[in-house]
Image 1: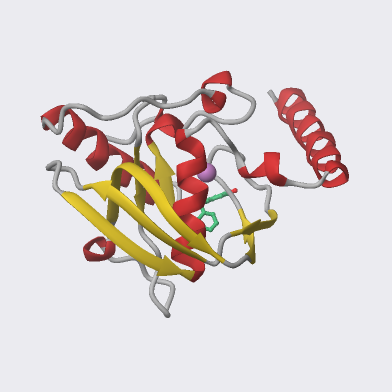
Image 2: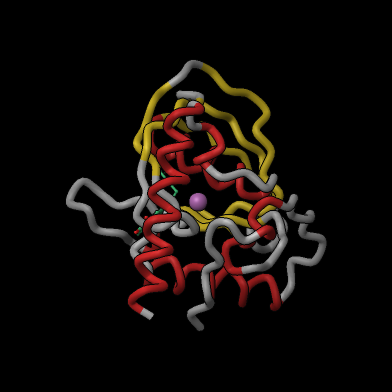
Length: 174
Ligand code: QAP
Ligand code: CO
C-alpha cells in the first residue's frame, strides 16, 4: 500500500524516532509499504518518519549504472548506528519530504554501520560514496534532522524564500 509522505515543515520530521523492539509482521508491512511508496515517488531512500511512523527504520535502493533500480539491491536498516566514519564528500541531495529542492551537503566519505535486518539479525556494512551519503541522510531523519538544516545560513534563507513562494503559488492555484 502506498502511504502519504509528510513534507517540510511538518513538526513530526523534527522528532527523534524510537527503537524498533518487535521484528514482527507489522514491521514487515511497514517496510513493504515504504518500498512501494518510495518507488511510486521516484525515491532512492526513505525513513519511516517520512510516512509518519516514528520508528528507527530506513530503506535505500540505489540505481545501477543504467539508472535502473532492482529490488534485490534493497537495503533495510533497523536501529542503525554509525560506529566509525572517515573523510568528507559533497553531494547534491534531495529529499521526498522537501520536494523539488536540491543542494550540496558535506558528509563523511566512508562509514561503518551496525544495524538489524527485518528479522532482527545483527548486520554490519562498510561503504563509501553515494551509499554512504544515503545512509547518513536517512539516519539523520531518525534523529529528526533534514538535509536543509546543514545548509549555510544564506542558502537556508534562499530555501525558505523559495519554499514560501512555492506555497503561495500552490495556494493561488487551489
Ligand atoms: C535521500 O532522496 C538521498 O525533490 C533520498 O521531487 C539524497 O530519494 C540519498 C526525490 C541524496 C542519496 C543522496 C526528491 C524525488 C527523491 C525530490 C530521495 C523529488 C522527487 C529523493
Ligand atoms: Co530525506
